[in-house]
Image (cartoon, rainbow, N blue to C red; front, side):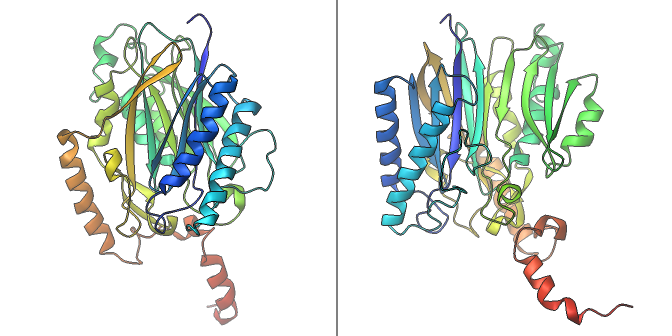
Length: 365
């Protein structure tokens, strides 16, 4: 194709079945119907509707560019329609990610999570869409570092002449609303100083040194938008693969290590990020543990060929086993840290209400 295409992944929790564990098939049907009509009328070239846990995931290809009001409105209207069905079925937390009653031109800042990238389709265009549940956008920091900056993970950084120059990481400070771009490998230690604090500094995009977009992640944090705890952010991530970019296997490799992320029960605990197949993306134990799916697509003339369920592979069985062992270990801590988040991270839960109720009983020493 001679014209750039845009890949948009937009998600929202519009109602859980049962509790926060999964999504009702009716909500998927509503979304497919809405997007099918949009494809017939022209805004969309192609789409795929899926889910992870209680999140409805819209994967869309179009030529409207990043932050298109038309595409974002379509996603918003789709979530509103699915919320209506969720309310009819009395599903839990119906519409909890929709923090406004009216669309205002862009879903960013309104609750849904968004990852988008615009690019010229290559001769062969493999992409992986990662979708996670019961965790936050900081969950992508470690995998993105390993994919694009760690030669022990990604052999192409050493032996592929195109990748050998390295990548640039765009970092977002979600507290100060500022961004910073760091170049690797020369600024690797600076990068790690920031993204190791994954509650505040998030990898938003990754570019090859020649400017080619390589990865895009959602960075929306619901608690910072709403000013209260309204559910975990359940982020999405797009990674392009092969031909001067990390191979599919290199992109998947970091998930053999189920690193500890924030989220899990009530968004207030830490747990291992478990890589699972589509059929196992229905967290139930203590509303978790946090989990991630990987949908692989080939893009052909703007159409999505797939998905392939890339974590449906016995090679990830050991990661799942470790996840369960880590889950056992952390759960044994009960309400104690490090299983429960620190007080600064509980700012948007019921902790402030408890502190206020008891503040008169504190005596100065």
